[in-house]
Length: 536
Image (tube, rainbow, N blue to C red; front, side, top):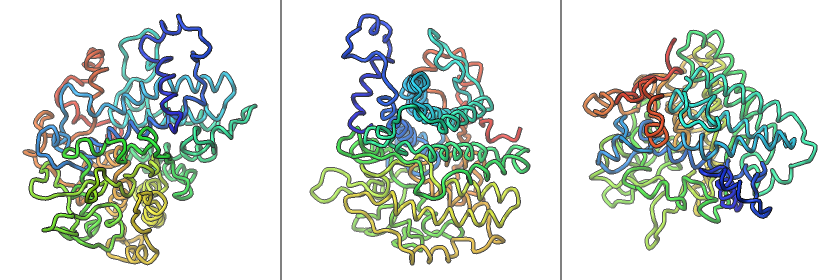
């Protein structure tokens, strides 16, 4: 990442890419490093965390209905219909991120850290590794685990989620262990510098909180297990309490935005949200209706204002003369043939050529990985299911208020930022009918829909975990557009999606025998429920 990003990628690609053994055998030039130190590996690793999740989020958001596209072409709507394009790597970037972009780079960083007693790098490495595998299994289900980097092996066996979840906890505990160890040589200056730890600047206490947050999220996925009320709910609460104290401790990645390679991947410079503007990046009716009165009441159609101040900060009003000032959205699978729903990056100014960026979709915005608000909602949910409604309500209120803090801290990096959300606006919303006013009035839909709002536009996979564990329940997610059998994709049997198929190029081309064992060659594999949301 930072200005070191390109250099590090080139070096690590030479060391770790295809054919690297031959390259190393013939190159002994000391000017060309054959072993890349942990300090050089960390910045590009952190960058790839943002790049990998952004690219897959664009299609995850179609299923979660965070965003959609204006096109009605099948290539655009197939994900919104809970289908998939055949023979395509779209939806396989997190897989690539874990096994290639992080992959051996991450293994080398941990190895170098262990051998040279760079314990901070070991701790960060294990924390990121745990996070990456958690992301990958929650997206795909069975994945490559123990055999991931076996030398000389061309085909790999998969292991299911119970094994991966356990390994994530093991790696997380190793991260905590090494974060409490002091390196003989101080790396504080390097980690805190512009080419160091782009998340926490080497603050090991915050990395421990990140790991505890990951544990909390993992247990929060298991609400359908018989052990949840008696065991896992307490684990969620325990680890949330050990994690972030407020939004200032969020795991977010910073950028200078001086070049595209050091910019937020969701911003204009990288082009991931603008290159295919008819396919991506328009808000759907699901989020608009939540922000326009639909959390507990009836949403206003095409609103110009809302008691929820997040509406005017998250979304861009129409600039089309006939609908000027109205907030509009895409109905999933329907495209937008008659309306001009603005892209989340804002509107290109008259005479301009690029999107200005707004909210967290700017070049300089910090990229969220995990936040205090989403963890508070996980705590609220766990307490609610267990019957501790008083504690559930406290965490619910904390979570909502924290979303306003989140915007005021991270959502105002545009060249012309929207105004901060004021105390008066916050209090008006908190006392409105859209918010439960006491523990006795609290419903699970209140918690989960506020969490949906908190995670909108960045935490696509965690939002999808929530939707899947509640099996797309319309009483929990009131504004989620419930597709009919005729609207669902025919290439998965007209059913809702529960997983992404493994990455096409590496798995369907090279590892088909293993795919067959898991039923992944079946056309409806994407609709098979993952272990985490099952009751058994």
